[in-house]
Length: 245
Image (spheres, rainbow, N blue to C red):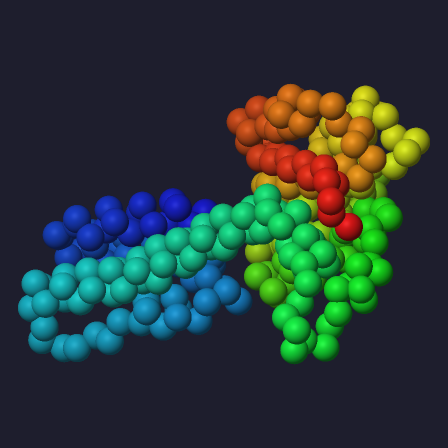
């Protein structure tokens, strides 16, 4: 059972005022919660613990159940909100990755810094592996469990994910245009790769070093998809290398 379903079921439990029905439904919900939370969050397991005190009235026992449910829901809702914020932050980082490159490698450091602009400007992006290395380092700060160069069997063959963040079931595919790349060839490659990737969200980042993409808006729109139409959300970002490394 997915988290949103568990949360909705929990809110319905709070509305139950019959003790026997509440106790029965709570045990079923608790079983689903423990199955979901196993190896994920010890706080959820602890929040479900009820101490049975003899001679309590039905009203007191109902209140105890409701308090326990509310405490568990609070943890689940906060966790869902936190993941949403991190997911938004991830896409903000990727959308503004060009700003990072510019400010990290092109802007003159403060005079007292031992890093010098001349040294930083020696770093050049020549291919997608260079982009992957830099982007991975930035994303790792947000998602410490992110991994790169991960192979997975799709059932049709093996694909290699540039960066995968398993906790949010997201894959990041990185491309850097080459002189021998055409826009049509790049578009075809990305479209074919996207079909095979097993994930809830695929983020495609194209560093258009050679300015092969003539209309970035239409290029993005032609590749982006929703979960309803493609089985996964596909987001596309294009950075054209104007005065970037």
